[in-house]
Image 1: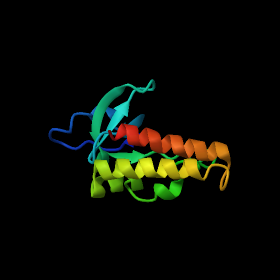
Image 2: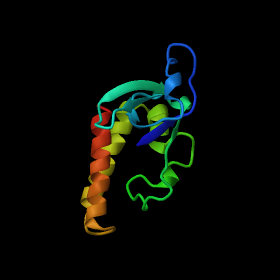
Image 3: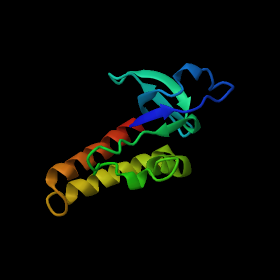
Image 4: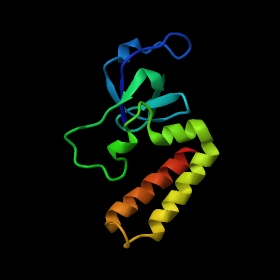
Length: 129
């Protein structure tokens, strides 16, 4: 995912004023933070989720893996699940969903699309270890 830093809270999480207006690749660090990444994927800086907005490229082709209906709220659905149900339950959901995509392979959507969905959920489960 990509996020744009739109504000800078004060306190322990503050100190990234110079990043306001910039876009970065990011991953979920915990229920309150994104970890900004370098373009090569290395961890760079934790920021509060409330100080960021998810960047959606309107001109991009339809994303079948993480479509916009999962991004209609200020927080993505998977992030809500993490905050509400916790890391272990969300990780188990990701593992079970990956299993579902593997089991229906060739019976619903295009095989390549289903494999990408399975890979996304497996990667998310790994991230939540």
